[in-house]
Length: 288
Image 1 (cartoon, rainbow, N blue to C red):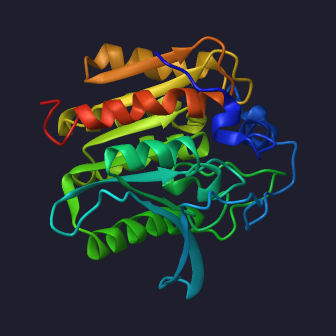
Image 2 (image 1 turned 180 degrees about the horizontal axis):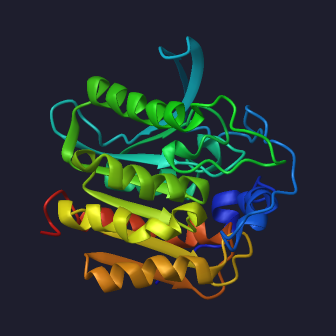
């Protein structure tokens, strides 16, 4: 597999891996987690956006707040034809700009994709998957998971209204916290997705029920790809291998890619070409 150095995706980053490693390491075992940090901020860390992407916002009806999302539309997208869509879920502490940039934009342009990255209500919403709370506090607001999930679905609906989106080629992608969200939302909203990809999924709290989540996608004919770095200290490879083993045991349509030298940041750029190739080969129904 061709790989790309981390500077290709994250030249201006302190690297997403550092951001998420600081937040997620206490949960590596998923057994009686003991958070050692204070709460994450509701607003994202700042990064210079890729100049090719759009910074957008909308009024979120459930709370009346203004929520942001990031959008890239390939020059090959046309209202005269159905176009593929990728919903991309960012990692903890950031926003869509930390994921929808550089190499991802290059691949989206080449493949004629619309790629949208919702905020997920705030930087630690977990997209409906079990919310990990830092500092021993409670989830705030109490319905955070539901609001985060609702934000993703609302943005998905807006894309379908604005563009001629191909329902047979609508895909879900996530990194770290977003990887957990992708596995969760992929198994919860089965009719929406043709395929799901998770990069270094921080799905520690979902592991006890991983076969339930995967099994629902298997029954719906949704293939799953997981990409993991062998040197990831934020989401240890041992955790992700349990998901790979579960997919294998279920005999579901899947691809597991383990990059031996990959860490929590480099795995994004290095794994993304294979993910877009996976999506291109799996329109809805292809796994059945």
